[in-house]
Length: 441
Image (cartoon, rainbow, N blue to C red; front, side, top):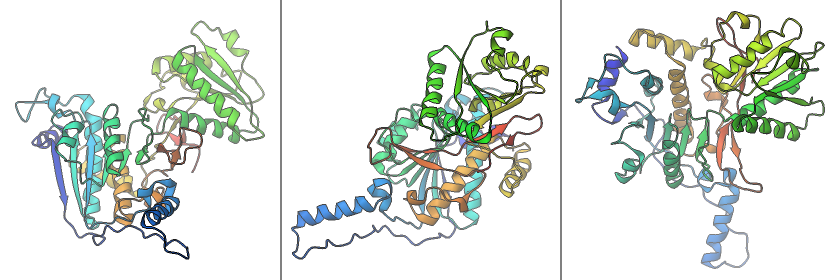
């Protein structure tokens, strides 16, 4: 079945409903954890008793979020799945494609949906009962504002969203008001969101990548020369400042100083060589996010590889870059990513075989991400109920990655997280055939 055919079937409704009606794993219940009675000799006044009970509840709640202390298990769970399918712009006159093939910008969202759908079908076979609504996040009719007005999200138990700004901010407001978890699947940013402990950011932010990379470089090499290459732009200077701040906070007594190199295209080979050492690895961190600027620096460094031992460490955007040019052939190039899948485990083989059989194609990374997050969090729901936050990181439900969601406090002294962020970062080496993970977690 082609992806064009899949899309034409989907466009019949902007909100698709999938009723997974197999036997449920749990009986319906919605009870709260009782609190211990106050240990006083005389009977307290009613308002004082309520205050004491509220205080005890909040103290016992994971991460000081009262909702996280509640046990809410149901016979069937309501899930909202958001992905950018662009059905309004792709189709004209109902179900007719505006062109002969699907535009490339549609494919990531469609692949994410296909992976998520496969996970839902598989969970159905295991007896999980769900009511899943799939929404096109780029649809005018199904904008978050419209869904709120129509009360379509009032009974949702979990939101999984492969969206960016402004949808992530709008869905965050829904999650906070409804007190349900929102899994931000692909957006590597907090979007300025604060005070929402129900937000789970999966695609880690640049600051987290920098912390993990610096920790890896400081700990993996006994002797090293760490160089931080950045251009004199506001954005890259901010990245460099974050690296230096992380260095100051690091407690490792054997940490090596980071030498800053302000990069320009006019830098000569002689000027560059002054920063390099011949007796130890030169670990070159490059803050360029785009391919053109990244390769401009790499070309200069490639001239030095015959004299100096050089390893290059790039940004998470390097995962899709190809370094096939002859000058890069012998260079050791690495990047960071919260995702890594060598596509050898049972889940990967299952997904790959399914896509070959049904779609006559290979699954993309977005399809793997859609499957992984849907599988992981629906399993959390079915096992622990709506508020699984007390055991957010469950290795028994691992699909491809060890998810490591940690609370983020944006203000000193805060007692409740502003959100949770996946802190699992892989250091990955670029190879011609397949990339290789260097740090094993």
